[in-house]
Each structure stands twice: as C-alpha cells, then as structure tokens.
Image 1: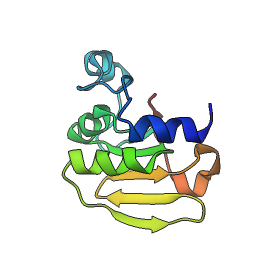
Image 2 (image 1 turned 135 degrees about the vertical axis):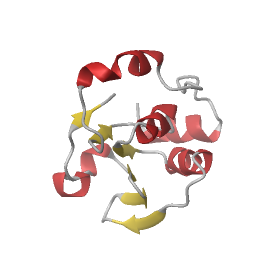
Image 3 (image 1 turned 90 degrees about the vertical axis):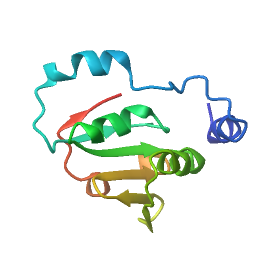
Amino acid sequence: MDAEFWRRRWEANEIGFHEGAPNALLVAHHAALALATGSRIFLPLCGKTRDIGWWLAQGHRVVGSEWSRLAVEQLFAELAIDPVVSDLGGVTRFRAGTLDILQGDVFDVSATMLGRVDAVYD
C-alpha cells in the first residue's frame, strides 16, 4: 500500500482499525513487562491509538512514529495537549512533555531522532 492510500483513509475517517479504548490485552498483561516508571516506549505506526494516553498515565514516556499528519494532530487534540512542532529534515517532531511523535515515513526516522528506547509496543 502506498502513502496516498493512507492519506485518503485518514481524510475520509475510514479508520476501523482504530480502537476506542486502550488495548485490553495491553492493560491486562503490561505488568509482565516489568518496565520501570519513566521507561521510554516506542510505538511504530501509532496513528492516534488510545494506548499512548494509557502508557503516559502509567508514568512512562512515549515516542511514536506515524505517517499521517492528520492522525498526529488528532492524537494531540484528543489528549488536549499542545505540542511544539519542529522539522528534523524529512520528519516532523511533535513534542509535549513526555510524548514525542515523529511524523513522516518510519524509514526516514534515524536512531538519533528516535533516541533511547526501553521497549517497543506494536
């Protein structure tokens, strides 16, 4: 699938894959990960998943990557957070507190842009 496909899906709000609540299996089994408070969790292709707010509420830091700028803007609006937006050269960073979303092609995200990651959740 190409980027145009996903742009159209987000613009038409055809996002049936988007759950209205944090993933039930994540909530039930996250303790098994034994992550320290403040751990940094990477969510590739995150969209505007409710899991992000849940991870933040557990005291973790979150970094996500997402192609759709509309999804990222909706995520921050739903979390009622105003991000600082900066250009990283091909990728746009939306940052607020302990949340970073790297908007653009995930294959353009470098290790330097991503920073330290303690766990990956997808």
